[in-house]
Amino acid sequence: MATEPPVLSEHSGEPPQPREPVFNFPAPITLSILLIIGLYVLPAYLLPADLSEAFVISLAFSPVRYVYPLTGQNLEWLWTPVTYSLLHGGWEHLLFNALWLAAFGTPVVRRIGTTRFVLFWIVSAVAAAILHAVLNWGEVTLLIGASGVISGLMGAACRFAFPASGRAYNPQFGHLYPRQSILSAFGNRTVAIFIAIWLFGNLVIGLGIPLFGDLGGAIAWDAHLGGFAFGFFCFALFDPWEKPAR
Image (tube, rainbow, N blue to C red; front, side, top):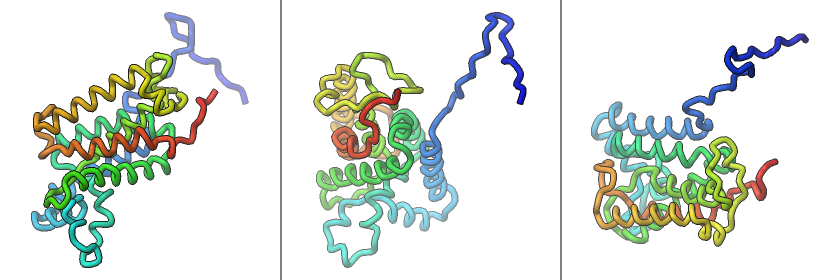
């Protein structure tokens, strides 16, 4: 089959370069953002007040559930350590998390694939919920939001997205950088600075000083720590790459 020659630029005499789309997210990230938007819109705008409250309570995580015998309860204790991560308390809370999910979820998805990403979401949500429950044992509070999972994605990205060589992150090929060991990551100046700033921000939040305004209620800094620690220390369990692709 005959093919036509490429159209040349009248200025440079070279084939025009394809333009990168402004929003180039993997499908799992796009679907995740649409899912959390849908699960916010449904109770906030489409359900009656009583059903909306029941919907949120049935999906939100609460430490008080685990004080009482599980056999005498409904099964909310089983799924809420994951489903809470899909709920949000307001548009500002939702959009803030969607932004960071796109930023840190994109390289992780491209590296580990859809199935591992779903598993990573589930386990990092549970890890964040466990630390929150331990530090708030028996309290009648509701934990919602994807911040614990996003913190896990940040921790995972610290293991590969910041090259040890000091090169800048490449959005196209950065997910193929070699995974750094835990000690190497701590020795990476960029990673160390990132973790220090992240920990400082959560320390400030833990002291009750808001950094980003009202995001729909008190911020569960302890869930952030649980998610980040899981993502950073356990990322190798989900990482299929030992060496960068050629």
